[in-house]
Amino acid sequence: MTEKMLDCLGEACPVPLIRTQKALGELAVGDVLVVAIDHSCAMKNIPEWANKEGHNFEIEEVSEGQWEIVIEKSH
Amino acid sequence: MPITKDHQYYDLVVIGGGPAGLTAALYGGRARLKTLVIEKGLIGGLATYTNEIANFPGFPEGITGIELARKFEKQARNFGADFKNTPVKSVDLKGPDKIIETFRVTYHAKAVVIATGGKPRLLGVPSEDKFLYDKGISFCATCDAASCKDKVVMVIGSGDAAVEEGLFLTKFASKVIMSVIHEEGHMDANAAAQADAMREPKLEFRWNTVVDHFEGADRLETVVLKDTRNGELIGVPVDRCFYFIGYLPATELFQGQVELTERGYIPTNTRMQTNLDGVFAAGDVRQTCLRQVATAVGDGAIAGFEAERYIAEMEVFEKELMQRELPGMIYVYSPIDERSRDFLPVVREIERKYAGRVKLSLLDTYKSECLAARLGSVEAPSVVFTQDGKVVGKTRHLEPARIGAALDALVDHREPALAE
Image 1 (cartoon, helix red, strand yellow):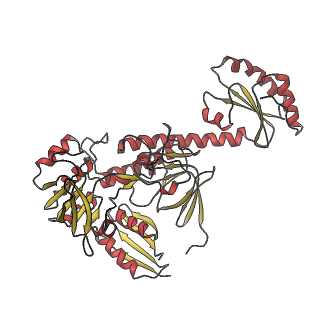
Image 2: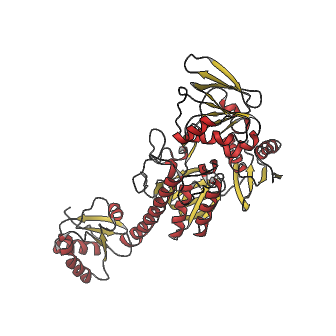
């Protein structure tokens, strides 16, 4: 299992979602992608997408208005 | 993959971090319940999808949904509520130990507030699923307006949200086309919003139309509308399409456990109680007549308050009424009933006689209606007998001799002989 960091700080929608989809596509099942974001719109569409796709995820608010979405590739 | 899951224990778990959930958590936290809010995405729920909230009291200049949600969250945190940002996978809410499963943790709660709100309604037309979210169909003007600068967008719907968000989009897009199902000049929005819309040169209306299907290669390129008068198909090239056609309750998780209406909402009484003990619902997910931040906050306050009351009563019920140390006698009475009052001195006398052998509890049905309901069907005045934490008999015949005989039996571990 590997863990990859994806820095999307300062990027507006839909860029973080598109980069997340691409980065997760390059990982193997069971690998973990940590996406760093600071645009609230990405806090809506990335969880919505991950939920729809059935990937497990948890989010940590690392500081006010900045989050890390930890996504485990499940298929 | 985690093999063993972590177990965490809370008094109150609130599922959903919108205005209803945040208010329930605020009340729970303030009542010193160990409280957790679980939210899958951004805290604030549907309110964060609105650029400006103009009708929440206390903010005469208006406030953005995100700012308002931040304030709600801060206030709930100030009262000690914890937050977890992850989706709930499944729940088991039927028993007294409510179980909420997430990816890594199994949460146990004494009470649960369901405040999951709604999710955007879809049209269900061909190719819609190919273009959702980042592919061209959006539900949030606030989120995606900036990426529509100088582009052509379409808005589906004609209610308040459609018209207000359509007007907001004109600040970015070169043209906003509104597809409206009604006859020319008819919209569902409020009159003020309609008047603003008719004056806006960047808004273009397609009356008497519905979406037939969507077309595009990777991304949405064309919305094909159908004229409802003659069935004619009209292809309209757009860069993005926004839906403002309402929401569906997010209740799949609770199917088969919590009672739902035909349309999937959770019916409650005025105390936000669902059909399950210790499970409350608040906000947009509830069967109600108005879904606003202001109503969600009111629901949340009641749900948080009632959750606290439920937990307190549960504790009295288990630790006092259903205590296991001694045989128990519960006098169920109402202070406004004369017969109840008259028998109270007799009860006190029995208590003195059996001191150290029987535990007497008084249950005021006027004050503790729910607690009385927990004992099953009892009317004041009556006497309930317990043994080893279970009800073993009850009677409405308030005769000291018969009650004494029943208590003697219990002290000797025999079945009490009682007439209902």
